[in-house]
Every structure is written in C-alpha cells, then in structure tokens.
Image (cartoon, rainbow, N blue to C red; front, side, top):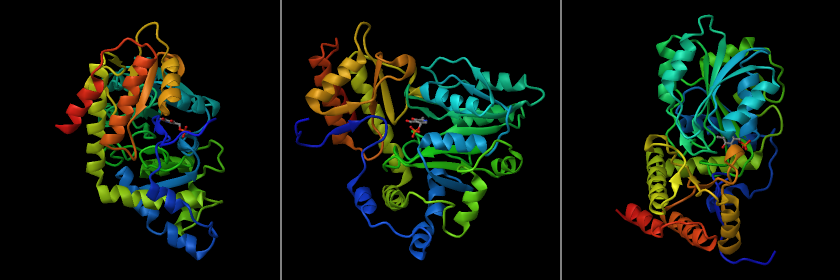
Length: 387
Ligand code: PLP
C-alpha cells in the first residue's frame, strides 16, 4: 500500500467516523475497573444514557457489538421453544432471526418487500389471529441498514395495542440511535438493541439494551441459558458503579465524551442535521437518474441511503473504483442486494461539507466506472443544503 495523503472518507453506514474529541477522550491510561476512579467514571453515565433512548428505565452496556445486544435481548426474556414474530425486513432482520433460531426459538416471519417500511396493519392482522397469544415477542428493526428503510415503531406499538396482544416489543436501533428520533418509553418498546459505532460516534465495542419494566418481569421467568448477557448480574453490579466482568473501560471514556457532544448539539438538532443530510443525498441520487432503494419518502432512512445501480452494472465494481481513485469507502450490498446496490452512510460525526465531498466522490466514481448517469447530483445536493 502506498501512502495516501488527506483523510480517508469512511462513508459506510457504520462504523462511522470517530470525532477527534472522542479519540482524545479514549486515549488514556487504563484504570482499575474495580477501583474508585471507575465508579466516578460510571457515575451518572448510565443515567445520562437513558436520554439517548428517551427512557426512564435501565440501559445496560455490554462489551459487545450490536449482535451481542440482539442475543442479550432474546436470552433474557424468552424460553426455549417460545414463538416470536418478525418481518423479512432485510439482511439485519435476518441476522437477528438466525440468532433467535440458534436459541431454539420458533421464528414466524411475515413475508415482506425489502423496499418498504413494515406494515402495521399486516402485523395487527397476524396478531389478531393469534388468539392463544403464542407469540411472546415481536422483533422489528427500526432502521434496516442493508436497505436504507426506516419503519414507524409507533405504528407497530399501536398494532399491538389495537388487538390487545401482550407480546414484548423488541426493536433494533443499531443504526437509528442518536441519529434518528427514537422514543423508547413513548413508543412502548420493551427491549431496544443498540451499538456504539454508528450515531454515537464511538468505535465498535459497546452493545446496549434499554429495558422496560415488562421486560424485567419477563426476565424473572425466562429460561434461555445466559451467563455473559445476564441482565441481573449486570444490573446488580451497575448499582454500585461496576460491571460483573472487565468492561470496555476506554470506550466508556469515549461514551462520556460523545454524550457531552450530543447534549451540546441538542438531540433535536442532531436529528434535524441527519434529516437535512439525508434529504440532500436523496436529491443527489434522484438528479443522477439512479433509483433510491426504499420506496416512498416516508420509508427513506436519514442515516443511510441505499442506491440501486442500473441493470448490468456491478455496484461492488463501482465501490472499488471509488476506493482506488478517491480513497472513499461506501457500503456494499448485503445478502440478496450484493452487487446491485451501494450504500452511502451519512450519520454520526458528519456535516454539509463532508456530504458534499462524499457526493463528489460518488459522482466522479460513476463517471470513472462507466455507470450510466446524469451529471448534476452534487449540484442538486448543494442547492438543497444551501437553501
Ligand atoms: N442491526 C443493524 C440494523 C445493523 O446495522 C447492524 C450492523 O451494522 C447490526 C444489527 C449488527 O451489529 P454488529 O455488526 O455491531 O454486531
């Protein structure tokens, strides 16, 4: 590899760019995780983390990636053979399904068009037919990172309420947390799954569960085996400022800094910034004459835009040209979208000029790779950002 000057553009939809303030916060000597300095570090931190999920309930932090959060959510609330219901939303929903199946849960999947947000009416119908309440949980991905489709979680809660179904509602917020509005309590979510490496602007390595009282009650009778992910062990240790095992100490320093940064910007401003950058990205894609994968603006995510390449083009070949020529990483197509789409991440520590640079890289890359397109996407985004 030859040296490349200037900053690499990391425009995958996570892990995202880590701001210098967070890098500096992490760059510290390790401390004793069973000593008073660690207690001072965690003091208030777990409390402050609640604001990110908009919950007054507990938030648990695991040294893990988002997948660990998936597993923790399931093993703490369910028993072998329990039935859970989900939609075929995309690559990550299917990943969560696999975790459930490996734990001997019976997963019922509602067939679904990956390009659309989940349909609460369809869910209500399915739940209404479940007279014996065999479904113990409904699993939904808020922002399906593989498709760039965001779903309406409030409408999912309404569907459960409408038919009076007691299933737990579990939501994957891995790529929406701290970039798109997520309201754990107001939306009646029982378990939220999060990760550090996207909207929170941290390196990978922290997995989160935000849990409701109802989820904690389910935890008392849940029989799936658990050890590392056990909520009770974690909650007891957290009570006195510790973790049941070695925590990711330096990531916790980083988390404290990222919470400060998000609070300084203000959550509403954070969401508005992501909405602005998402809108400008979509305008660029439309001006290029390319197709945005999600159907309908309500379905489009504000943290990632998934773009279809024209028939006969290979999106990975395009990504490779962009990486070689312009030193920018874009997200690959996952699962059945391999080679058909590329994904532009626009979340985390990100602003207008970073987006302009990103879109310039894509527009130059489309030309360099010989993908048929109309020039003018960057211009359309600039008009949107400047207006
Ligand atoms: N859920 C979603 C929506 C994701 O985007 C990802 C990863 O990108 C995951 C879950 C899995 O998280 P991880 O790769 O951190 O284990």
